[in-house]
Image 1 (cartoon, one colour):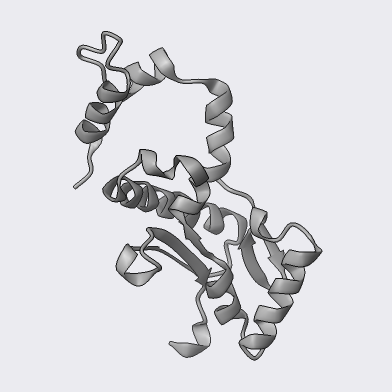
Image 2 (tube, rainbow, N blue to C red):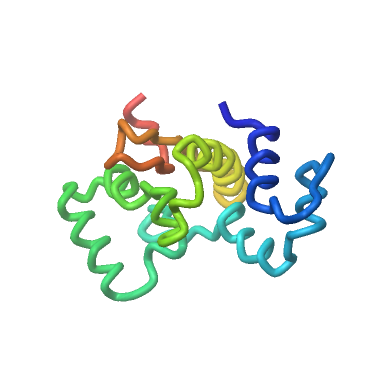
Length: 160
């Protein structure tokens, strides 16, 4: 199971050419972190969402006419079921987020990151849409295409 000690061990390995004796996570942040990179990653930890036809999506997934056409096609494919459409669009693979650098983390680390992101995204969605109910979950590789993923969608209260 992932924990802070594992993270510190990985950071010590990454910065093995530096004296990191007795460093904690904030010591690593102070020594090697960047406010600019923190701002960059803040978009991942506290993302923007957009609403289209009562459906909620991660902002970066619907950016142009091609994306909107994919959304329209998916909506039609699911018989105009907005809940099924959200599920289809809102499965975000952790490896996809990091592209060529995805190999820098293990599957266990990706799961830990996904668990943290789920908590943050759940809170963010609640802040932005307080009257709506969302399901926000981690999907392990057995549930996806061998990738750790986050799935979020509005709960269909008519099916309880």
